[in-house]
Image (cartoon, rainbow, N blue to C red; front, side, top):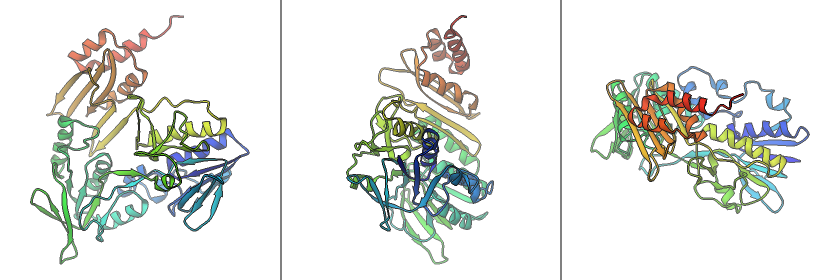
Length: 419
């Protein structure tokens, strides 16, 4: 059997390793588009703050790892899929045949329609190549403008703050991390950052970027102000790397469409990770969840079904985000914005930067978000994923959300079957 994995990120590597475990005699190849060993984008912030070197971003720490598993790793960019002959064609014309193909091509940064976005000194923070340029330009005291305060932007924000730069954040929504925090908690994060010396402009967008005489950049903002910068970083969202798959006839929407087995519209091709429009555990709908835990879980499910055939249905991933913003940890799980006909409970302590929001459907916790309360992260996810009926504890939590640990322990004990 010949298995081909396109994409050398966490999903691709985990899938290849899982394929090897399940099929020891198979021919397995990973095709990655970057001229680097397979690495984790989530490790780039640690590289930016000198906690690790480039090798520390690599997904596997020894050069012999893939060779020891008889997994071939090729650094080439895929151009198309020939679904009639079951082969993938790279940009330089090389063909790789497959019996089963996994697309784990991830995502790429979205390019905002801002004049000057292509000027020297404007970078994404997505690849190791990007990171090298940021390290060069973001010296202590340098002026940096960060466009975007979503999940990815806030991860970068922390790294830049630790580099001791003069940092200005520009976010078009009315709060920070708008896709995981509501108005109250998102603006608490904003105030936290401002207290740490970061200038944060919400409800603001970059109108244009221009080169000025001393070699610096000037970012003109929609609020009428302008910020001069040594470096501008664009972190305004990502989009799935699926165009070559679409051009090859696979069905897609926001990502490549899959069924309950993570199989695409072609029976020999599967998808996983940021390129995959997979099932959401909470809603039952299909969406792109661009987070590493989802990518890894997708990879294992897809690999199992590629080897065994249709044996495991994917129940969906819990929408989950955990973020550390200059020491303030925020988290959101499941249907954190609530569901139709549901109820919610909320605790707000703005002075101590603590926040907890619980969302219920009947007596089941379906979503939650928190700020500054790290001890509850595992409990919140566990209750949502288990769909535990809380009974009397639902009313108690409506009065005092901080009793969530007691509710969890009580529900866990009530489900233990007596010996």
